[in-house]
Image (cartoon, rainbow, N blue to C red; front, side, top):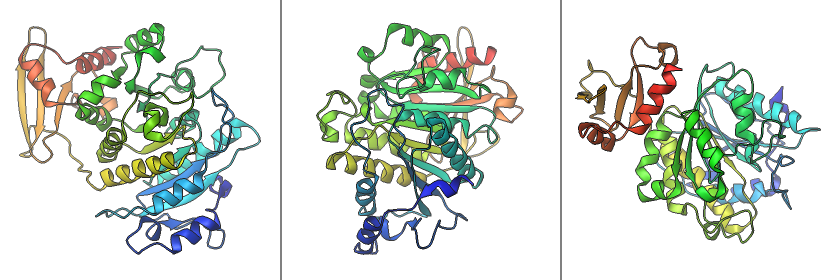
Length: 386
């Protein structure tokens, strides 16, 4: 069984958690220890584990990611007003081959998903996104993936999978279960024009760093329809991470912005996996990763499961006629969130007999009232016709 490959949490981390006050996270996490083994999975909300695989790093890692220090920083944070049951199930070490590691990660993630537990993965490199995507094969027919990244991470078809090319393998690998891919925070100078064009041809969504930083709330509807969220920590400013090397850029998200995005990911009731990748060793980076995880779990505690319907008193339906289409919007009275119908998307993608609902913003509704069809709606509509 894949869970047998998990390495227990180190004794020094366990010893540190013993000294913490009762309100600290470390006192409330159920841990995988050498003495007691794996914690009970029943009724758990999230399960944290690390992955030390880094052989497919685009820039070779000079040292192993210090997962023990990340745990120490996470454990010392105080619990929120949560109902979440949190597990820390240890780490996956490198297998004999990279494919062996991928297989173990895929099986662990699939096992957690089958138990309705949300995996939180701390990975050395972002190519680990690929086996987490494959873990959904027997669980969900079509998957939406959001990458928070300064790059799209496309490579040549014959290029070996790496942290800069894993998306190509996801797109080309069979069976192809990827319905939509969205990038949050790309920086134009890191991406070839051919990659930007490919995003357009595949009707994928891409949002520049400046666009999201100017209005962080734009990230919420993108994450609301996502099943997998893959965060490349190199999308954060180098100064925010306390790192001075070529892997991190002076431009990127601030700590406040990335924690807000992590919270939006947690709030989404569709997000079933959250991966944090490409971390490097510095005291500030350890704290940043810990706080990102904290905000994601905080978001989970505010999840509201709702599905818009004109028959429900919790929603208001708005019909907006335009020159080419009649757009149907819904607004929730509970959360004040918005959706728009996309009639071209097949019912099997929605598991209902009605049109698919695309999360959107109030601004999209106001644009439609001014005869401007939202770009995300247009892409989703065209994708549904293909």
